[in-house]
Figure 1 (cartoon, rainbow, N blue to C red):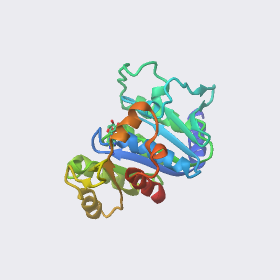
Figure 2 (figure 1 turned 180 degrees about the horizontal axis):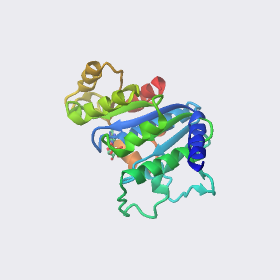
Figure 3 (figure 1 turned 90 degrees about the horizontal axis):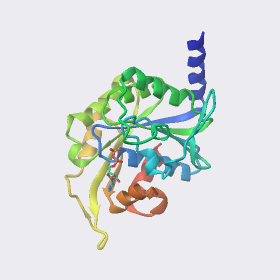
Figure 4 (figure 1 turned 90 degrees about the vertical axis):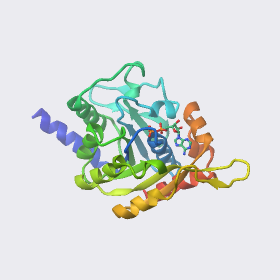
Length: 262
Ligand code: ADP
């Protein structure tokens, strides 16, 4: 039947992807998309073939972060070509397909599930070393669909800020992975301290060290502690990628720890 064929197609697509990394966070605004983008670019700079999938249907931000807005993907009858950022990084986002960001996307669970399935099954990702998936915050329909479709070989990476660490939402993201049987690659503490551009001394604006404690409590690795850097904000606004333009900075070194772990 048709459904069986589609399932075969999805299975075949996924079998060509070596490693699947799903970026999660308890709440919005913690830098999840920023980390997804910098991780994907970091892997690509290491020569890996990478796919970056944005499944945030309400606020897709990846096209803007990568300066790819206005680059519609090539759509054929049976497949969609992802948008190339470089010769080894390919991107897919609903942001490429909806006419304007202002368009409110009010879709319910089953439609979102269908869309995510299409992104995994009908996008011609080809052979990938890594697929990085940027989920919307929380543990709702989209992350659930992503994990269910990718299966238990997909790793979760949980992003938090120091002041969020104690909050239930972050814990729920870790528990979510564990309950679904997906391993947690680790916790990333973002916006963790500020390095003075003048004297280079680090100041912990918010309490620091919570991410490490949380990792210990849940017995998962602590991956990186990325400081606040105004250049990261500028990179996001202007659509260039921080790890590429500031490879020797402290935040880039921390991001590369995640790359090395992946
Ligand atoms: P999320 O995907 O969790 O909603 P974003 O990646 O969109 O969060 O980041 C939210 C804002 O914080 C953006 O303006 C981004 O540039 C900024 N940001 C993220 N990480 C850092 C950091 N380490 N230092 C400074 N600004 C950051």
